[in-house]
Length: 273
Ligand code: ATR
Image (tube, rainbow, N blue to C red; front, side, top):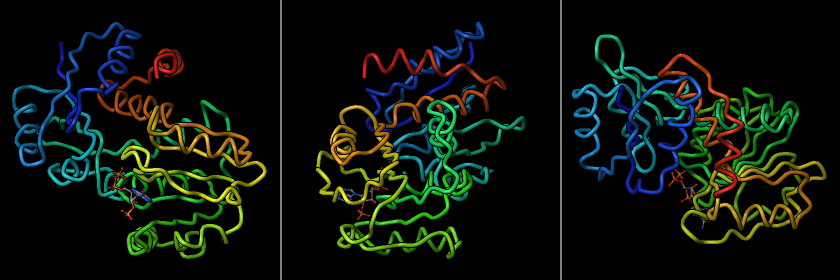
């Protein structure tokens, strides 16, 4: 069987092996998909070794997404914009191509699984790190009307807004002013606060009457944000489990040329997360 792997640090609890095996079963494809823990200094060599030994494709997660994009020979537009990659494919000549499917995965989860049309939404992005960069362009492509980026460190928010380069649609505001910003239709939590175990103190006034609140993290890391959104009256409050499954489906399609049915895989994971 062809060999796939996900590289991260830590990586033990990754759901990616389960997701890709479930997708592969839908098509009767036999594959191996293992987790590989690589410290940052060992990452590039581990990836090169994996592909040199015949590896067919790799996923990459924290903290290696930036390094994955940097080590590749070619980059998709999404990987270039994000400055990071979550998927590596081997080109026919053996060189490596970097892709970032996180943004497409997020938008697919919202617009196809949940059937919410993002066009015309005024969106607020909390955070401006790697996760925010990976999804910001996709939200704009999906038709959000304005994107306001707020980050604890304002320079990073400004740098992301500058990189997007659409001053009529993309603005930055200060974290300390969150209580004065009014309300939004879409609020994306792209901070790692939940992952790191620190709580965010967010004003409920941010949540508009028809607001969709979405945490890019899933499970325990998203509990506080989702609870806040529900308490604030959000119409929808979701974690990022659907995004996880959809970004995997995008990677699967890059590797195998086929699009899996994500719904049964999502439902099976939802029962355990
Ligand atoms: P990731 O790849 O998960 O995005 P990252 O690139 O380290 O990780 O980005 C983490 C993001 O979460 C940043 O926007 C960070 O804000 P700073 O740029 O000010 O560090 C944000 N973040 C993490 N903990 C936070 C907290 N307790 N409150 C607010 N923002 C936080």
